[in-house]
Image 1 (tube, rainbow, N blue to C red):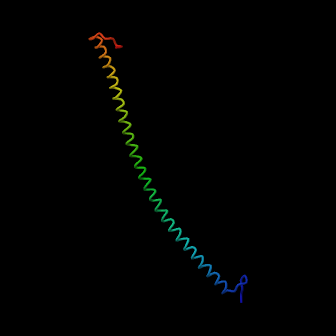
Image 2 (image 1 turned 135 degrees about the horizontal axis):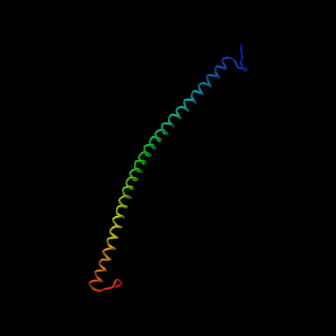
Length: 108
């Protein structure tokens, strides 16, 4: 009878069969682990993408609101400066009239 590395054909076939079954089972477990792991990971990545899109939309809304607020503040500051200038002119006119009408000096 023929022998390869000291084993007979039936022993070699038994070794190959056992190795194939164990290898197939390990591949099945690995495939199952990878599928389940990547499904959860895929769902988590999709959820993360949705949250990032929502955050991006929120940030854009905040930025546009901040820009509108800054424009309104600039407009109000300009109007305030106009009113301050007008108030200074009115105060000078009032002091001039007081001096003219009552003879008061500007330091009183």
